[in-house]
Length: 319
Image 1 (cartoon, one colour):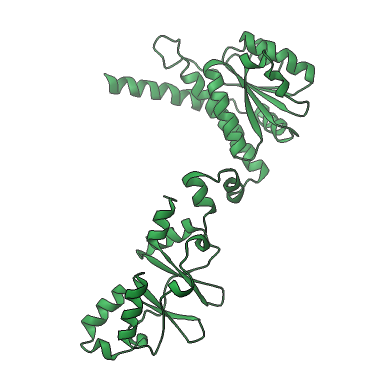
Image 2 (cartoon, one colour):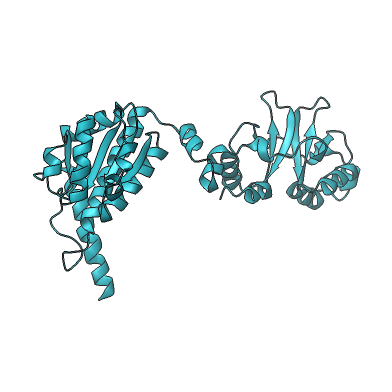
């Protein structure tokens, strides 16, 4: 019974969103243009469950390059309407289009001459009639069996609001680096901002030998630096190969006189490298794709500048 009820609710809400597609016309484009041309902030206004949707939309706008904030209609009629300026644009979210508190706020907005975009469940309502652009987010039925709790209607409003936010993102040419600047904290911010240079082992911490270095010295260098490999350079700091734990194991299997050899004999000559300015998240993708735990960090002349280890990425918290 519970599973069937869950399917019923999801089906109704899915249909509510799909029904919006046929309603997208020039009014949607007009709404995007109004929001795009806003010289101030997008003021998202709502009440009750629609207000909760409005708060989420304001956050989405702000995080994707469109300055915005949420104004609770009840707080608006008690002074917070003063937060709205002449160069703002109002985005009202209302299912009935007749919410008393929003109607009171609406009068003040009209006096300010602020353009109004409305997401409304009743396109013939008072709020809709007073708006510059109206987007119809009405639904055939709520998922609530009593037809009382806002369910499909709030889902539809949320989906339409997200469509506006993404259309604005596209129109503004908002890119990943822009996203990083407004999401500096948490895992997401780290993935977008943390670079190889923030995590790399440099200087004396980098295991380094040359092609003629004896295998005894190679092993000592690898074990003392504890990064599971050593770089091999040409004597002038340019990378010519690496020797990993795996190379050592293969060397033992293939050469009974391993300690009599030098680094050049068993080194891998095509190691994976990365630049200092690359994103740490990109480095992680390279490691995962090639099933390796370290990358040699080089500049554009293949000069060795450091080592990046998988453990350093994991400890950084980007995943």
